[in-house]
Length: 409
Image (tube, rainbow, N blue to C red):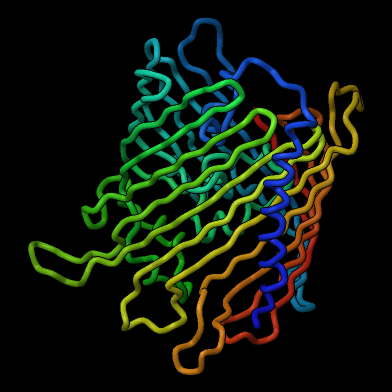
């Protein structure tokens, strides 16, 4: 039996607790009559601090992350190291009434990588019907859109949200999004067609099914790999006193099955499903979770180390223990938090023996953070992670400390 069984079952239990907590929070918070200001995960791209000079039509913003770390893996350590994983710049402009533009440019690890994460025009025809075109963050799960470092108490991004959902995952395309409000409720949707994945998700140096490998295709912002668009759909509903739940799917054909009229292969699909939830209880505890499933059609010529199904997720619990004026900062906070993570890169069993295929990992990350304001965080994490190989040998155990800062500017 997989070493992940205990955590997997408990993560499912935690998702149930989230739903119960969402129900309990109805009675714990005061009701407000204004629903139009309810923010959802889909609003994260615009729900950021910007600086605008007078009537100048362009607004600027951004955020930065930096941290130091010390890790030990099975008794071996590479010592202390420091890194600046990303600095991101935002540029937005209101071109005309109900026509706006926003871009997000990310500098990773100094200038090792420079990526355009988002660069799209929005045409607002009606609250329920808006056109978006350009480089779009595919709305799969919640983290891919709501990924800004200052919003999180944890130094590292969730494993499932970066290795199954390859956050930040953006593509060129078009689509529609909208919202409708009813008293304390808001329902929203997003629907896009974009360029998609390619066969690098199985033909890669990782030696496993690896969706992030598709991001290595430098031509994906110029042309689609096989002329079949990636379709991404999401629907979400939020109640002011309960929280938000979202369901999303993206899928396409990832292989080049035809070229110049010559059939090369059958069409091989990739489909990714995700559920995300978040709730706040008594204004002190916030619970955020996401679970994702990926299904692939893989050629018979590939060995069983390439998984046809992957799954994983995370649950974050954040509790505010102090909220008051501290060190001259009004409404400063001290938070305690914990993250539970599980990822299985190869769900299934070996054809020959029936034994369970492993290639999975689990992690638990307790954290403490200090927030002078909601836009800035100083955070300290302890990460304990154990990873089991394909054959289920004793897990490789990693433990370490990360201390970092992140802030909008």
